Image 1: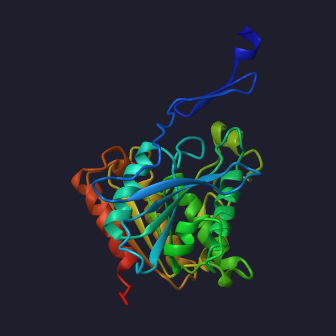
Image 2: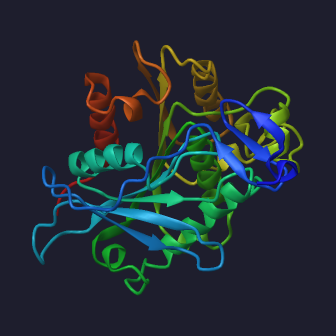
Length: 312
């Protein structure tokens, strides 16, 4: 290979480096997990193409179905973490977590594989995630392109979730729901689950400037910092639970705590709850999905989704 094309022009450990010819090397590449039928839980998954124009995909997880009389199930819309530049809805960690959640909570889940920076500069990840919710909403009358959503999803009980940067996206989408004219005719977003959220409170560093050249700065950009968003009080959901990790190695615990206070002071009329994962680090539930605290996190998530639902 020509040494001029392999020359590294940008080096941002532990995230990625960029070559002169545009190639990107990720230092934490995703391990792809094919969609499957889990024999232990009966949860089945499959991949769908949301947008032929952008190539954005999603993975849908379906719990074990109890025959043709199966009632409609709550729908969880998931946005994966990874600092906007790595991670995937189609990777092993996401598959393990959502398979367990779908089985425990008896919900349908859609994990959105938005496009990653730096090849796709921010705010593309946010735009893809919002477009994905609109695509999901196209199934509300049972006439959408995906049979599982038409048949089994209850669009009156939709929940947004994400971990780390995915929680940042979930907040943004929840605000868009509350501020978009005409969206009341779409899915009814009941709540949001923010797991170890990444919310910025400092000036942009070099990697963020490279990934998001159009940003006004991480501490003043409403997509990255709810404190800077005048519309945070218009979140289009009724309740939020925020998980923070006691030993978060990226120092994000205080930002999660502050996020709760921001919502309380914003004029938003919903309920917010803070849950601390004692003795745990950032996104521990993806790294060690069978540990006791990871199982407790899933149980809490399931309770949050189902605590206001009375079976017909």
